[in-house]
Image (cartoon, rainbow, N blue to C red):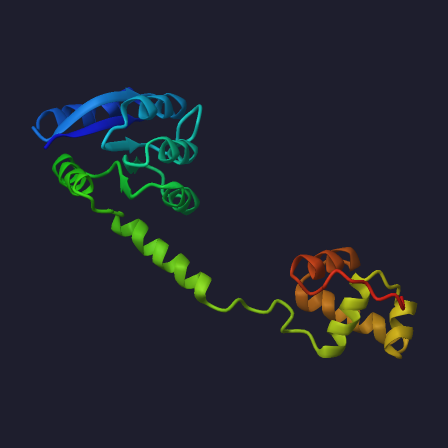
Length: 220
């Protein structure tokens, strides 16, 4: 059974190299070539190939965007990313967009050919180097996030909350029934422990990192 293939890469020499490799076999048929993402989307819609080999870095429509569009137009097409970039964010985005496999252009001819045969047979192939990084990223997501405010005392947290609600030192002191000098001392500790430059940064940090609920204390 012959696997129809669409090659997508903005470098013609890369496309020619892969085409020449596939033409040496009886089980692959290159039915189209595209030099950019936009052209790849059109050809995928018209040809509905069995396999699409696509780069991520392209000048018009990037690979991730093209993959997402192609999967909506031709869900039957298996997509193998063949790239030279090692950026984690692009690799993860390509997989989330619908790519089944992710390979590097450094793969030698025979290795690439064998891998494309596996992909054509229904396997999802991720380069070991990328697979290790994906596993690490998944583990990091499962790990409990460190509390950014764990270094603060309860009183320092109270002062930071009142500050983030818009309180002046005098109002914070009144609300917490402590002196203004004590408020200043606590604020100094907050800034030092959280490595913040001033009150404005402290307020932004408190809201950005989820300390606040969004409901201000009307007593301030």
